[in-house]
Image 1 (cartoon, rainbow, N blue to C red):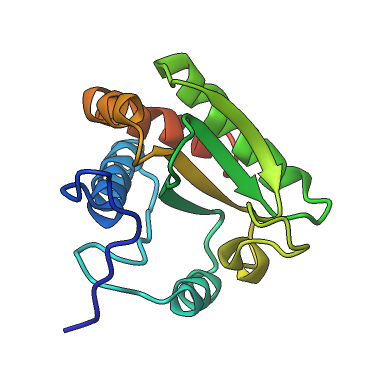
Image 2: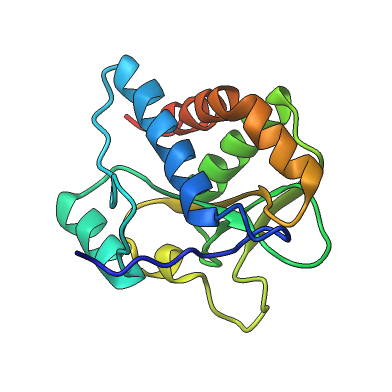
Length: 173
């Protein structure tokens, strides 16, 4: 069996990013497949897949877009932000903006915007945005440390999945 890591954990220690991410991604898959869009997931169960393997898999499959779903962490903060690469890549920027716009229609606590690079501001891009050959973005779907963000995710999981699917659909052929 593959290694399993939890990612971020809520303040209570009872909520794990890996579980939230998988629920959201499976719901997005369901929404896209309803519209006859082939979806390729890097994981469909609770197992660890390295960032390198995720990128290699997406590149090998020649995916049209790569969307990575996460939950933000930190002692304070709220809302949704989406990261893209720093290169002048209009398609990734449009993808990120379309997804964020759709999520905002559903209702998010705070629109933190579309950003380039990483939160560490170290001149690099997040690994998945740097190492995929197709338009990509990394969604931070609220802070797992924020009670209201968690409540919004729980109450709007299906609507968030539909919103992300709609944003993706605007950007694929």
